[in-house]
Length: 322
Image: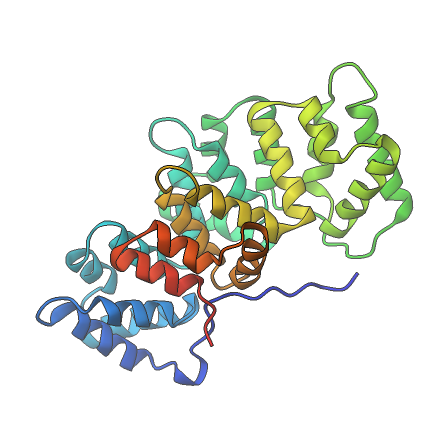
């Protein structure tokens, strides 16, 4: 199966990357008379995360001050939050988002699912390391404390970062997994969720795509329909998220972003998290799917739902760089 390459909206500054010049521009924007928000937007949205880390280091070298502290001291509200998110190392940002979903009153189960369902094994290990380093405790322990039952089981399984990397599809294994899923759900009274758990959390994406196709031949029903019939609540949402992410990650995340924007009020927190997490990876492709599905560009949808410098920075992040 051919590898699929996705495209982000934020690209490396490449030959234009000059940490010293970028630091100078940010310092002038923050320390001058009034704040030059446009300059801050231009620098932060014009560099990928790795380059922003270099700028942070150079800023401290040049001025003996921490860029993050200066941003905190000079900005406020959602604009400040978004700037700070962009300055976090990528995997630490993932760990931060997971911590936010777990801490406080109640657990934001949907955020947990959205973050965990698409991580590679290497990314998952790195996230757990960053979580431990930053919060001085285990991510797995925190997830265990804050969730329960079968929903907890799928989250813990995903946290292991133990998904098969096999790109070749073995038809005999595909047929067996499809049959096992059918026997564990539709073809019995009660559902053996551990079978769903094992297959969805450990098999490779190409294998699972083939399993889903085979399942339809066996059942005359899509795997998503079977999951909706056989499970409920957060477990159902988690299984569906994994399936949708495997089937079409671009459509899945286009829908996640749309959920943040549609209706009364905007879920700014989750919108920021999604844009920051995807802008360097696949947000251009997500935007293409969004336009096709919802008849409006991501930039226009966000522009219509946000305002001020916060809105300007978000729009710049979702607009593909030339």
